[in-house]
Image (cartoon, rainbow, N blue to C red; front, side, top):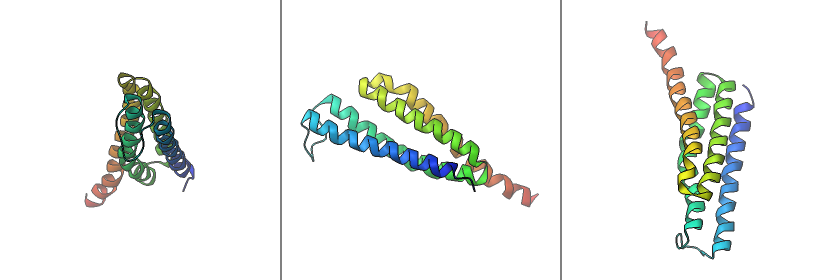
Length: 132
């Protein structure tokens, strides 16, 4: 099996780790001490980026690996790289202003949906072929 999906997985996890660090830095910068999670809109956007990425990585990683196994490791990696770029753009945009998050969000959602639906087709198609 190709190591590319593994590299994409590591890159996605490193991106998420950076987002976690950004929350810590923002806590210090804006003086939002745990367990507080609100009080400054700039901090709240940094926290929301981290939380939203966690919500999405739960779907992204299994979809990446299912697509890789049942369809193509190369194309899974390309789509996975697009997801990472999308999440980075989402973070950069959202840090600036909420309305700037949409291009990155759209790119990462498109990559996730493609991986998920492609993986589904890759799982079902061989089953259908054996039935008929």
